[in-house]
Length: 271
Ligand code: NJP
Image (cartoon, rainbow, N blue to C red):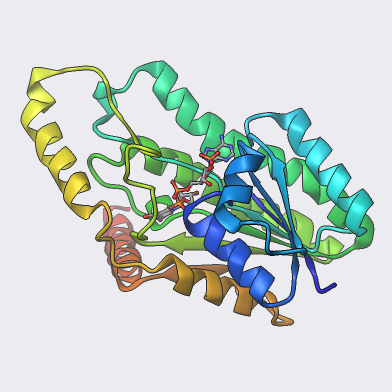
């Protein structure tokens, strides 16, 4: 039967590619999205090892129910891919409080809901792997991405600590930080934009929106390639704690590390 994977946000984008790559590797995949039909549409009915279940990750009870059903039917969840997420794009002051909270509700609290539902089953078996799709925006922030980055920085802080909490129980963790991937991420189907008009931000917002529209569909990162790398890493006995994917992501992360080193050195001078 291979390993049992539970993948969130598997109807489209990276989640769909990870589910596909795992199926191709002979694994059993419980693939979830807000609508099970969307998952079935994405995969057709050709896979007998694919099981589509509806899961809105903001629904904690549903997350517990999916985890319990999966363990009952297949005996375990060997790999959780906590992937579902979306971006609120634009300048902080153009967002309502509700939009900022929605961003955290999905990217942070939703992701926590699924981990909270799956971790007890992994602890019981003293085994499992938690793959969390964060972002290079969880390491580096920039104008127009402040709200999205805030949610992914939170994911990073939470997972970096949780990985240490779970390690004594034989549970491994992998944080994935992609650069820009060719998915629906920047499309109107997924991304949402700040809705408050503020004249001071009008020009910068228009420029940012034009950048997003131009980038949409032309992102350098291939989600299939990342999916293959993730499936490859999962099959190894030892997994790294991080996978920074794409030249863009590695460059941004390296620049941030250089800046931090400089700032640390300067901080010493100020003592
Ligand atoms: O995006 P997209 P990606 N509950 O829009 C699902 C991160 N990332 O594959 O319910 C459950 O093609 C949605 O399902 P549906 C990013 O932050 C991306 O690029 O049918 N599911 C769909 O399957 C995210 O964490 C880039 O709408 C929910 C999927 O999520 C992950 O990669 C760069 C849901 C989104 O598919 C996958 O995003 C980066 C909910 N409440 C990080 N809300 C990038 N693409 O450039 C959404 O650094 N979904």
